[in-house]
Length: 373
Image (cartoon, rainbow, N blue to C red; front, side, top):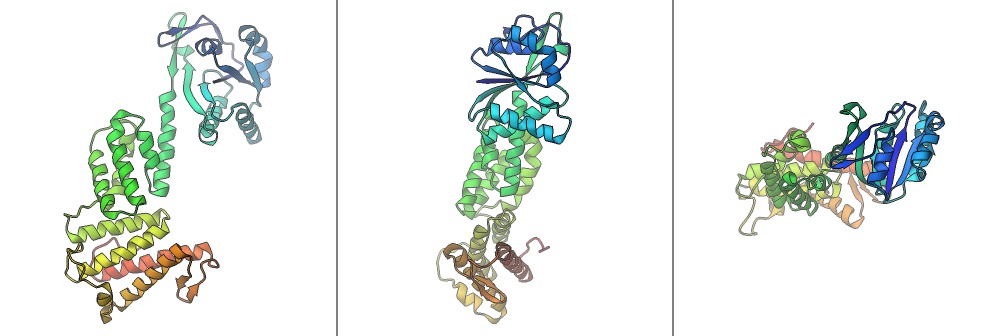
């Protein structure tokens, strides 16, 4: 275990720090209290030159095994990166860490906190506690210690939310939510929804999106309360059950196509759009979209003269899906472009244009969908 701390150039006063039922002997350095509470920890105290000159002798007398780590004072950007590198070198992979933000020069504790947050991801550092010795909140000769560790979860929530918004998959958000019992229902729902989307199961995805929305009706408080509106906005278009009217189901499944496309899951977007076209054709033919029999023929429907453009789109969807799954050529207006020669941007544009064209066409044919921008 590592106890990471800092010292500034203040004239620290003696006080006895208390943390829950723990009480330390009176000292002017909070690090002495921490060393007593975590005797197995290696104590690292970051100091600027000015802080070392002022406090080194006193620290060495009180904590002879503590290691003073020299850092610059952070007067320019290059020095901040030097501090970053210094802290990274002193904190090994997988280390358990207690971080003290009590003493420090200017913004250095804040910078160190950001470094620690990064190392949690980059080096699997386990942050056990973030502690603050609140000298200014003292009563008589004792001062309380505030454990700020729960607030570090806000960084986890922020990171998980960003991942959800970027990728469309909420697994990480669900993992963070599982850390608190009150969030377990929504975490389970989000996990199941994520699995359904990854496994390309639009029916279960619609059902699990509904379960997640139902779970979000609860008054959670905390971070989930803040995120509730954004989650609801993302999930609402995807919700459906097989008991809903056909038009609603078609709109919801198309919303899943949009979801895949928005989050750059292009092969899933194309694959689902190809299957969705069959459901749309059944609906347009006046048949239920989930048939009891298999007598309906998509080819027969597309062979009608009025559906010639839709037939072309279907052919391109098939070619595009095959090109992605079997490394074949990319269909373009100029012909088939070899997949291994096409610029990635061109391949993505082909996907976007084709799905945009399909969406525009079905709107013209009478299915209410959000307008194509």
